Image 1 (tube, helix red, strand yellow):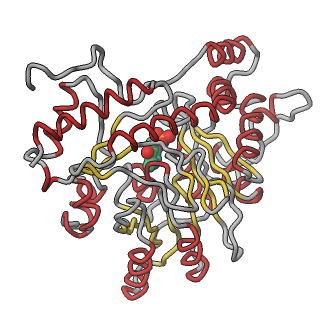
Image 2: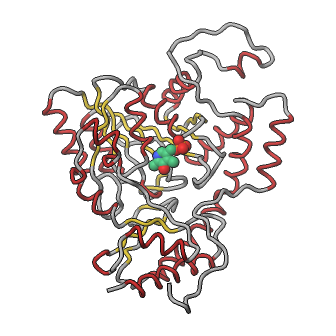
Length: 404
Ligand SMILES: *Cc1c(COP(=O)(O)O)cnc(C)c1O
């Protein structure tokens, strides 16, 4: 780095959690009550969350990963089934398909949004049908960075092929597609759709760890069985006043219920979500203005008809306009005290999946090419506009020094 370049004094972390006094008071209240696991606070969180995303029912769980797995189990997806998802996601979207014994079929992305390409999805389903070995059962789209997938196209494919739809909305709270909240299971064409959200520490709303599954009332009832040992009544119903000792096990269920300690945090965070989102939008607007016209940077854009949850701000470097690669770009940001990350290393590049399914890196050429130029800039609800311009200044300066 040159002598006269300005560096912010303190490191700007990529995504620190935003926990205030109200969350702390909520947790203390839960701990001082006589119910610390799934109970009244969890029930309230489920009801308020369902209301917020306009879903008839919601199920609070220990993570988004568990929400996805419970949803697959509740649909009866298992050995012999093919589940279609994107390679541009976090590994857990794909792991859960393996966990239920089904086969993940990865699909390449659309270059505009890095969401699953509907055309590539259609082709992948054709290929499975032609293979005659696996039964296509389910599509798991991921709303990458918070930008909704083209749900008209994906709903239509699911409806015409008779497939279940489970959305990975880990990034997509709150987001809307064509005026409908992501999490609202209403689909034209009468197919079933459910949606999994994440409350991991870095997500738009956090409970430290946690997740939520939304869907139709019947589907959420079935998912609830799967989430708690397959018991036909949960502990709150058994140990509460007027409860009965008797229960029956009706499914070989998992154990991934949310605690009231987590729900206490979630209830407060849900109240703060609109203000969190306003801050994210202000940071994004500032980035878009400051990075506009930089020839080495492609900034993410919302498509008309979509409102992104603005979970991430993944820029894409024009490597032909730079003398350095993405990895060096990230270390130059770090030297300027800016934290950053990469979302995602495509799933098919990871050794477990590459070895098991024999993937070559260019089996998904768009995901591969975009991966090599992706850098996620900091975007969180605690950043100030000054932080945002420090980041943009650092990006500009790196482009100046290493541009061509
Ligand atoms: C964070 C994340 C998950 C996993 O969420 P957890 O709540 O940590 O299980 C799944 N999918 C995507 C795309 C994610 O970013």
